[in-house]
Length: 326
Ligand SMILES: NC(=O)c1ccc[n+]([C@@H]2O[C@H](COP(=O)([O-])OP(=O)(O)OC[C@H]3O[C@@H](n4cnc5c(N)ncnc54)[C@H](OP(=O)(O)O)[C@@H]3O)[C@@H](O)[C@H]2O)c1
Image (cartoon, rainbow, N blue to C red; front, top):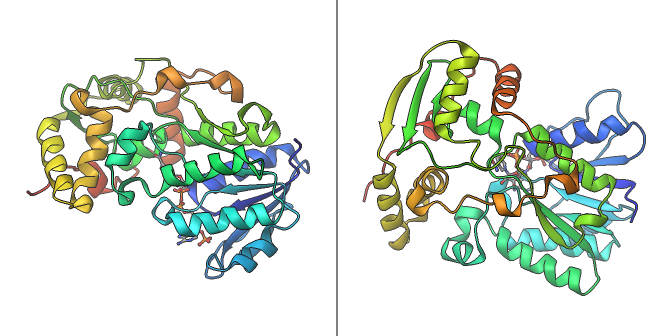
């Protein structure tokens, strides 16, 4: 299957822009179309052959028109908008337009199907249901699909706060032991893998793929702390956080149907709390299939700091996660 005409939904977002940066390395090999909402402020990067189309995401005909002639649709719409019905409309329009390959909007951590089912859609969007729909269409031969998971984006989590580090102020919040193994992937590596799939989709047609450039057990909060201290040649002040309590409160809130309250605590426990983690997908990783190389934590830390800047300001609400009120 050769993919030449590629439509990217959400081309100006974190993921969309990173994928475009990677695909542009192939010069004129791909005809890229950035698809946005009508209200979007997106403009394609200068001196590129990217065309820009705006659509009405609530209109089948608008989507059908935009997708006609495309070989692939790569969905990079923001996580909060990955609801089932709007996503299904996008997929149905792609099928009707004769699109060969659909890149699902996954990019989440690993959860088993059972774990997914226990969570409200507000926590992970409708991604598992969308996956099931794509599996059905793939089996019927209507469209080929894939979805990529690399866990949390290493660079965003490290620099924006969720990893527990305020680099500008040299302060760390260590959740529990700080030793739970993490499966995370920097965004440029995610984009490289996506682009390699678009370059050669056959190996991952009609199935998901997992990547992580760090070898098993080589990434934990404590390893991140020592790497940051060594790279920045300084010590961090350390605050020990009761992740058990965060987890217990989040689960009580979830049982009471207060998913909004529970979300941050569940995300933190999923990454950092050994007793209720479920974030380890190292046994599923297939880096070699999509051209992802092993990377050292030190290189990843250096690259993230270089890209964001040492003084980058964390998002306080993502950094300072406490047990929710119950
Ligand atoms: N694993 C991780 O750590 C991690 C981190 C971040 C994101 N993600 C996942 O990666 C995917 C892409 O996220 P992102 O951070 O790249 O997204 P983003 O930058 O927040 O947004 C991407 C684009 O989505 C479009 N958009 C916003 N609301 C929309 C709506 N209601 N309907 C249609 N389009 C809408 C906007 O484009 P226009 O206004 O130009 O149309 C926006 O530029 C999501 O699935 C997200 O969950 C994972």
